[in-house]
Amino acid sequence: MKLGNYIIDKIFSIFLILFCYFIILLLLLTFQVMFSLIIAITFVFFSMVFSLFFIDYFRKRKFYNEFIHNVNLLDKKYLVLETISKPTFYEGEILYQTLYEINKSMAENVKKNRKEVEDFKEYIEMWIHEVKIPISSLTLLCHNHKDRFNKTYLNQVKKLDNYIDQVLYYVRSNYTEDDFIIKKVSLEKVISKVLLKNKDDILENKIDIKVDLRGIEVYSDSKWLEFILNQIINNSIKYKKENIDSFIRISAKTMKDKVILSVLDNGIGIQKKDLNKVFRKSFTGENGRDKTKSTGMGLYIADKLCKKMGHVLEISSTHQESTELRIVFGKNNFYQVDK
Image 1 (spheres, helix red, strand yellow):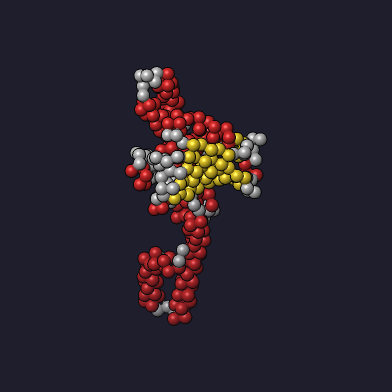
Image 2 (cartoon, rainbow, N blue to C red):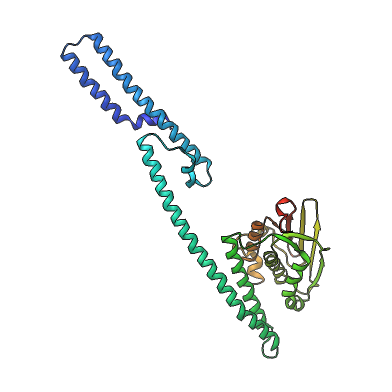
């Protein structure tokens, strides 16, 4: 709170006080009051006026400066009321009480919106689990009646299943951390499940799989990690090069403070201009437009889930040569749970 701005704000009051003093001075001169007494009255009058302005300014200055300072420091501005003392002047009390009512109203609305979001999330999860049943039935039907259903049917059902998974994990990643449990996970077990899920596509595309995980375990959520790796493996299969011996190399290495899981393929790679955008929401790039239709959500959700669990998802690629995605798992006391 600046003194100049305070004076400008009080300019009307100042002119009114000067006008009142001018009237008093005229009355004193009219009644022929001694000049020394006029000087004394003027001194007392302006001393009192100055004292009132001085007290008012510094009282308000302390409150508003603290208020502005705390607002600037806070990331969540709406919490400023919790950081300031209740003011001792009437205008400040009005502001304080108004902010209290605004915060109360906002908290009630946030609570209502959270309830609606949770209800929506629960409905989506319930719907997805219900939809999974007929999808599984369709998959089984395609496998058991290969003479009636060709691979096209099965591929479309798999795509549907993958998109359903994306919806499920996108919803979970957005609203709560209660949906995952960090505990010790065997990378071999997770990779085995992912490869088994993609067995038909791997065999159909004649992709050579090599796995070297040496019994390494990490702290993560197995379901979330399985989804992340499934998105990575799906991309490796989807963006393979034609007319060459395709491969996917899955390996892990343990370092002092981290474990790095690597998935390397010799597919079409990613252009340099697209490489720093692949984790963006709905980004498809040249590959997503030219090679096959893509939602651009798989790696975005995978990256988001990694961040939720404290992992780091990295990518490197050489166009028309190879792509490597790495998941970096931290090794520190934060993860030493549920042994």
